[in-house]
Image (cartoon, rainbow, N blue to C red; front, side, top):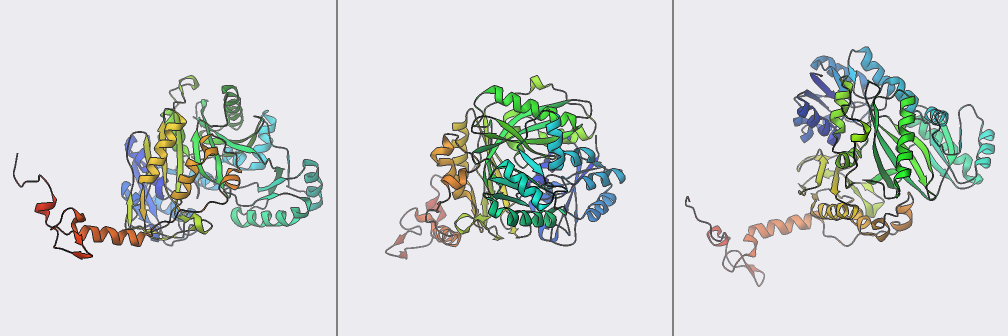
Length: 504
């Protein structure tokens, strides 16, 4: 087993991995940018090292800086988390050259499956259904126009490298195609350094379903069932759950899982990964892409299987074999994850920044909060605005939803605007409750959403301070307001009923 792991990431995922290291008895190392200095997740690591700068390119994406810290602290492994360097095959290869274990798949598997065009070819070769489309590599604009006409509109233009909605455009007619093509190529080049694009048939009524896989270095590769991530805004997932509501028969679930395992076995894949599919209104599924890393929504799978994916990532990278077979993995109950963002849904989801004045999270059975924040810290514009992930588990979907509603209602975040009211509206919406949530759900049922009138943070804080100073209005003569005036000051001897300063 490793002696020391450097986590090349920040926030809640860094904190998640530090906890996994603690449970395995491994020393952990944090790196942090100038604006992250003092963040609570840093203190969970055994060692921490500052990185000069604030932008991701200067800090968490700076490979030279990461390796400098790894050499200084003598780390024998690096966990990339998700985002940043997690799907960078060159970084994984550089780890090998530095004599450091990269906790993830091999650079070769990452290049093969992380490239959408190459992964599509492999899927077709292994008999996994693929979306009708064309690879834009080496083709002229006129070639792509002709090929797109044969596919039929609407189509989706997407970058072969990367993800997160960058370099992605839906095109509804031939008149829009060239403009969208140029924009997609430009975004792909600026975001991923590669303007390679694919053009695929765009289905208007589909569900986004993904299969979690886990493979070791001893020839064992298992699926850990599916998650549905259809509720998305601008190609970014908002709510994820398992089992997938769209899958209503076990045959479809098994067919998708078998296809995912077949594809990843053919690639010689090791460690955790996710094979993403789309499912149409007729129950047909098509390969979409593969994410060669731990997913943001991995807690959903952990809740229904009881497996710790972060721990197994580390154990597999250390050379251990999976001690359980496919038959031993069970999908129990139902889990839902909601991503809480610092953003304003009433202002086109504009990111919200500022100091967290108050942060309080709910507790209870079947409830998990993954975060890396605390009251008093600054929420900056430099990184992803996700504050926390709220995950609930129930014996069935209705129970998981009810727990989520309670959890979000009890969650208190003051100082920045969040999307919690928006999430609560979704959780109460009839189509969501019925499990009818294709990828256009947000456009169809939430496009006209408006927040209920709320009281601002400053007003709440002012009211709380006033109430505190007045003793809570408990009784006349102990700070009660009478006709707009405070009758006298708070008296703890009167306000705290049945309290005595004696030993019992």
